View 1 (cartoon, rainbow, N blue to C red):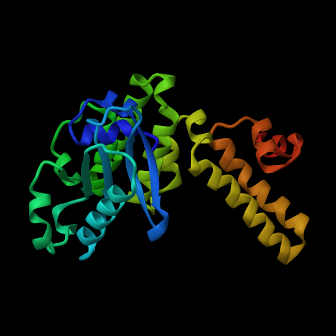
View 2: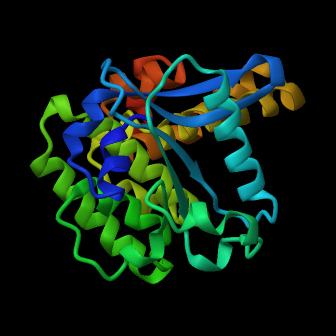
Length: 266
C-alpha cells in the first residue's frame, strides 16, 4: 500500500504506472464481502485495467474459487467498465493449491499472473523495491547480509520524497518477521540513531520499559516499580546514541537521574 510501484515492478510494468492508480479495499455491500488488494485507475481511460492482487502465503484449496468469484461479483456491481487483471503472489509454487481444474483457462490466459517470490532470489536486483520484496524468501543465512546492503542502498540512493524512512520501517518489519529471535544489538547496529528512533522496534523498546515498570509497580508500589524499571532502561537507550535529555523525556525521568547513571563512577 505504501509502495505501489513495487507491485508494478513485479508484473514488469514501468514503476510510474503507479501514478495512475490508487490502492484500495472495495466492498460489495449487498453480498458482504471485501476485496483488500485492488488497484483502481485514477484516470477516465477505460483501457486502463483494474488490478486485483492477492498475497497468498498459506495453502488454501478454495483460494481460486474465492478469488475469481469475488472478482466477477465486483465487476457485476461496479459502474466501472475497465478491463481487469488478476495477480497472485506466492512465496513459492509449493504453497499454491492444486485445485485448479475449473480455472485452467483463466490461469493460463494473459489476464492472470502468478508470481513466485523465491524465483527472485537468484536474480540480481537493481531495483530497491524488488530487493526489499526479495528479503521475504531469502534463507536466514543470507537475509542479514542482504539487509545490511539494502539499508545502505536506501540511505545512498533514495531522496526524501521517495519515503526512505517508510521503506526502512518495512525492511525492519521483514527482518523481525524472518528472524524473530534476532538479538536487539544486531538490529541496532543496522540502523542509524535517527532511523532507529522512528522504527517500531524503538517504540517497542521504550514501551516495554514502561510496561515492565507498571507491572512491577503493581507488585511493589507503583511509583517505585516504575522508577526502578525506567532507570534500568537508561543504559540501553543511552547505548543507542540518545542524549541524556532524550532518554529523560522518553522514560519520564528527571535529567539529573539519567545523568547520574550515565556518568562514570570512580
